[in-house]
Image 1: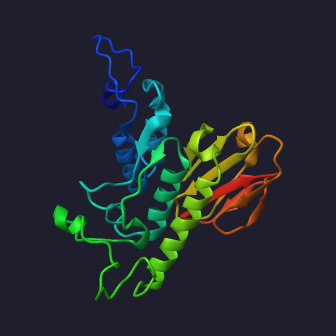
Image 2: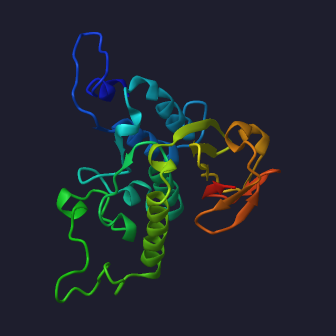
Length: 251
């Protein structure tokens, strides 16, 4: 973060340099997200890597004006980075679309576009399927997509429409809690609404004692997962399945 923040407008650098870039690409967060999902959890690894990177936001004059992204045209697609593990992939996408900053999603992410691990840029940036006569697969209409691709496309649509209609995910304040037993919890809130995000990358289900999150939950008693529509009772512990993410709209 210290290297990137040097260039942001408003940063008081020791050498006197004053940048004029209002927004920057958050490469430190992108790298931390990848490492957090793939590495075993430890005192300085796994989710802790992401937690500590976000905790360095004080170095930025305006961390909410950073572009957050899981991948781009110059690196392996995020699905490939996750070794094509769909559950880890979903956790990463949930994070990108609910954390602070301006999300950037590379075309084709919603249909699990992939390539060999040692691919050249031409493979990474291959054409999006559909839109031309003779295309056997059309991701605009869904023709030729596998059930797995259709499910991921629906997942993206649900998250993106929810984000579009909930300004709290655009500029609401953020609070996060130190990772514990493979889970990472954070929230976005303003005067109108509160969103609680729970990410469990453990293969086992985890029970969360809600007393730990009183500062975020406040007087809310129910949280509805926006992915499944399942209501959860916040007055007691919550069990979250393994390799699952909850985005809870608190009521």
